Amino acid sequence: MAEIRDVEGKAERLKENPVVARLASAGHVVNGIVHLLIGGIAIGVAAGAGGSADNSGAMQAIRSTPLGAVALWVGAVALFALALYCVLVAVAEARSDAKKAAKEAAKGIGHAAVGFVALTYALGGSSDSDESSQGLSATLLGSTWGAVLLFLVGATVLAVGIGMIVGGIRQTFMEEIDLKGSARKVFARIGTVGYVAKGVAIGIVGVLFIVAVLRRNPDEAGGIDEALKSLVGLPFGAVLLVLVGVGLMLYGIFCFARARTLARG
Image (tube, rainbow, N blue to C red; front, side):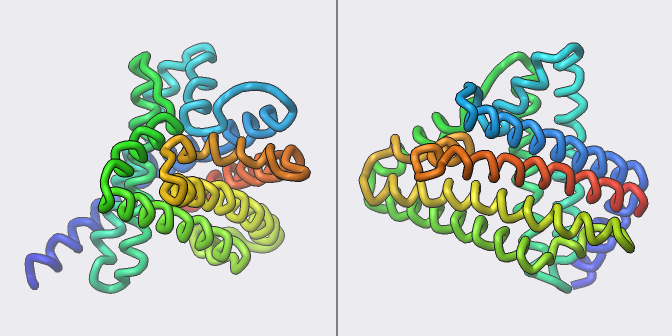
């Protein structure tokens, strides 16, 4: 028990280290920029333009700019720092708040995944979330237990999306930022739209996995890009895609408020 408390104490002290906090704050800024780009690409797709409305598309857009490779290296470091910060919070809160610890650990994994995408593009490589999802689905659908696992993955991703929508409506995210007065009210609205939009996008990814299992067709699966583009086929789909794109951009703006709060300690 004493050893566990010692680990929790070290995690608490490390996450409060000014250097770690500022690097993690930079990670929130990078995350915000990525969401702004994904939202912008989604709006472009709705208007008939091409592009991948996901992390890969955002990293490609960054790499195409002057000093893009440098920006990707910086972004990767910042995202890994943010992932580390989330893990430290998870360790520090493991016994006192297991639910929060689990959420922070999941966030850490997510930020690390985006960090790896940034690192891949910084090194001159590329990635495709849709192809990765379809490849994973094809492998798992090769067996009964694999299909069950893929269904559970889809259900979990769908639940995460629904959770973000509910959290956006209830504005539970406001616990993460330190703003007062009119600024707090503005970011409450921004966060609500942003969380709902991201929840919709993530939820659709979960649905695609479930559909892939039910139809035994791995091509039905896909990442965020495939999820957003699937909206186009719906009635008023282009309008829906624009709304989700705007929402993702607002989520990106909300990330800047998170960065400010963390930087100020």
